[in-house]
Amino acid sequence: MSKKILIAIAWPYANAEIHVGNITGSHLPGDIVARYHRLKGDRVLMVSGTDSHGTPVTLRADSEGRPAEEVYQRFHNQFLELFQKAGISYDLFTSTHTENHFKVAQSMFLALNKNGFLYTESRPQWYSPAARRFLPDRYVEGTCYFCGHDGARSDQCDNCGNVLEPEKLINPHSKVDGSTPELRETRHFFLDLSKLQADVAEFLRQRQGYWRETVVGQSLGQIESEGLHPRPITRDLDWGIPVPVEGWEGKCLYVWFEAVIGYLSATIEWAKLTGQPEAWRDFWTDISAKTYYFVGKDNIFFHATMWPAQLKGAGKEFVEIFTGGRVLPSTCPMTCLPTSS
Image: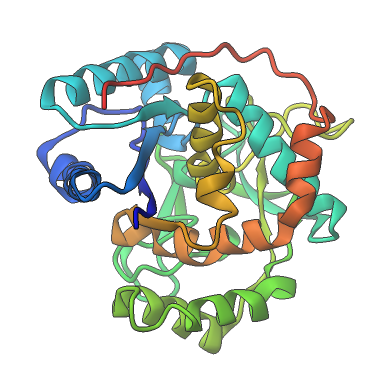
């Protein structure tokens, strides 16, 4: 009996060319598994896309003196050309800078807010007096307060793998000009992960034995030792998905909140493009469907903990909001292109 298999591959940032490590680390293994299941007669959908709104994109744009959208589009087109030449059999390789993704991400935000999992709070964030603006997390580097590693980003340390609280970073400095930023108050929406901790922990326990031991162990270990705490999911940015709330102009959804939603939005987009607008449900609401994620170890927290929390918190209200037309309109152009499968 054929199975429904969703192959979800990590979305590359639109700030540099894809190298051999990217191909062999996620795209090629995912393609091999997709081809295997197709040969078995399973119904396979393989999706990914360009992560268009990450800080690496704006850093590259700043260094080139070009608009972020121009930089993103250049690399997105290169990715499409590479995958087509290499024969990577995506059913859809899209991007987070599409009207569809904007609507899906904003719908999930509104559903979480409706269900009581979001709240607003003012907290200190690094501000550059020299640039006269708040600095995104990856614009600030310093010393990790867990392991002492120099060169840790203000939101995560690649050396020890811990997710960091930006204001606790030791000896911070701006990656742009080396200046020392200062903490200033700014208001943001927070996802209250503490309310979802029990559900996420149970979700992880149910996956012991067939998820990788390192993934389950790291995720459960973090929950059991530190617990899940509220995390800000908006940023002071002008490049990204606008917060769909009146009075929040000039702020966007945090890239790690909206980027993982891409697996769902890409499936919805594929369904629309193939003339089967409801076909995405086969991969997301059918309990017999299987999903395989191909990501790097630095993405474990956001895929194994935060993404399940977002899905659990949004629940059926996401579908109601998304299909009810209550999402703020977006002027973002459709820029995705399906590749051959």
